[in-house]
Amino acid sequence: MIVILKPNPNPSQLSHLKTWLESKNVSIHESVGDSHIILGLVGDTSKLDMDLISAIDIVEDVKRVQEPYKNANRKFHEEDTVIKVGNTQIGGGTLTVMAGPCSVENEEQMLSVARSVKAAGATILRGGAFKPRTSPYAFQGLGKEGIDLLKLARKETGLPIITEIMEISQLPLFDDVDIIQVGTRNMQNFNLLRELGRQEKPVMIKRGMSATYEEWLMSAEYVMASGNENVILCERGIRTFESFTRNTLDIAAIPVLKKLSHFPVIIDPSHATGKSALVPNLAMAAVAGGADGVMIEVHNDPSKAWCDGPQSLNPEAFEKMNKKLIALHSFMKTMED
Image 1 (cartoon, rainbow, N blue to C red):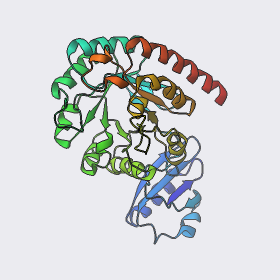
Image 2: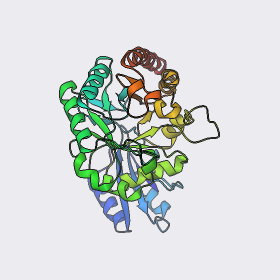
Image 3: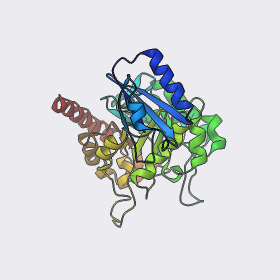
């Protein structure tokens, strides 16, 4: 259930209303917009009298919400969520470009890629320290050493860093990481999501390869229900019958998520296709489709990458693509105006 308040509600009446609602064993998620305050009521609201609440002076409207995700729901939170990270932000009309290698390999590689993507206009540095691999014999990442190298690259370039966590026990290693990524295989690791919800660091949740929109949003709900509202959603392709590409990029996810939720939406065309030649066009499609940003794999020598070289752009290709993305994003903003 959501309770929409009239503009500038009396503080005393608002406090009394919230106290009364909490006495009915429901929790309240308060969203303050430009013109209205919305109270999202989570819990068993079946016994609450909508007419009684509507009759209160400061209440403009009361609605029941049928979707199982409450905090993640656009109806509970009309304003877009904007996440501040360092000197940049995700959402709010900005174009976020996360770029870097699939795997952190060594200091020379990491610093080289970090410098090149920063020079080309990237706003966040990505890199895998822990790597969930299908084969137990494949490279699994450098672990703590990889995170240390990411932090070294951040110190040199000033770019905030994002890297993937695989299990709760690794969380202490992420104390100085700017954004924690939850990979597709962990999208429904609910114990991990709950734990990430108990800290304030932004969490980016990649869509499970066979997950529905509702399942994806329910994963975000786990994080928010534990107290962390700094959630980002990343579409990285879903599993379909098509075998030409690694996955099938669901561009429709952008307008769907914008309608259903308030989170920033990032598109990862690298994992969606598995083919570097396809990445620039799909990144352009994402920006044209209204995404808040893209996540691009970049390697200084893709042919020698320890992981996912075929889908990685070299620095020159990334720079060329990013110039187009920036120009397209500026054009799309003029169309909105």
